[in-house]
Image (cartoon, rainbow, N blue to C red):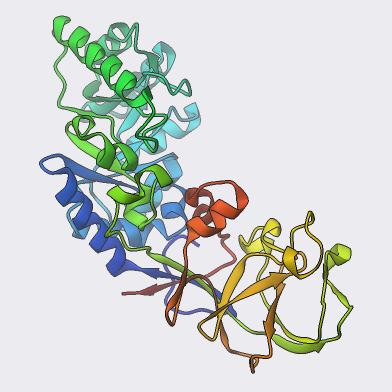
Length: 388
């Protein structure tokens, strides 16, 4: 399920606030001006719905989009989006014709792939294919080495059916302003651009900054920034929380109570009996679980016995209440004390209820991960409902 739905057919859903997306894009544009902003909408818009996010981001002033897969770009085209779309990474050879037919900007960094792109463009005819070359300045994931950038860039420039549109790199540690890595990578990228200039290679655009670098390293903004996680209102990392104040989280994960019961003191709950109740209490069942993107480890901690081992909080009636027992595939349970809770009442897993709020980063901190993984992990079983 890629586009945001307008109805929720089950008692668990994610609300996607498109007004928050618009707010965040406008705010980031203000922060990075005069650089432009391209919105990263890979992984179904980080779990928010790529088509709906892309349309709202473009309406708010984003000048282009970025995806990770050819199919992701094709889906945006099928939705009527005609903005520039950059595909990160080299794609399987059998996907190149799709990329070409959909007018997607390709990333290249190896001789063989550049030749394959030229062959597809030659067979297709038409205008030269815009290509961006990815330079590895220290991420060591993909890209041409920053020490030898000229040859592959020159190959693109010389290819009869390719058009060298840009060169870019990606930072490894921009979410940590104390790390020397970003400055080192930027210096390497500057050296690459100098080498290309000496080789008389002319570039239309150069880009380097992700969300973190866009706010923490102003000199990295260049032609445009590739804003991903910040578009969705989530901080790229604790080290730069203070630099992204004003962003609005765009996703809320909610459910409705499916069952209510009173449990006895001394009884246990869920798989493995990891949680034992010290006194009688009311317990509700919430109809979503780890198959929906609620990690199993959010339940009662196995290293702490009794009530102190209760899991992450959810919001019920505007109050924080703990998950008890192991989160199961489709359901989990919550201790609501002596609260009077009814079947059908709203439960907020991520988002706001009353004066309380739970952020995706709260889950991330508990699990030792990052907010990106939390929102991307909300499965396609969860309907996305547009608000805002």
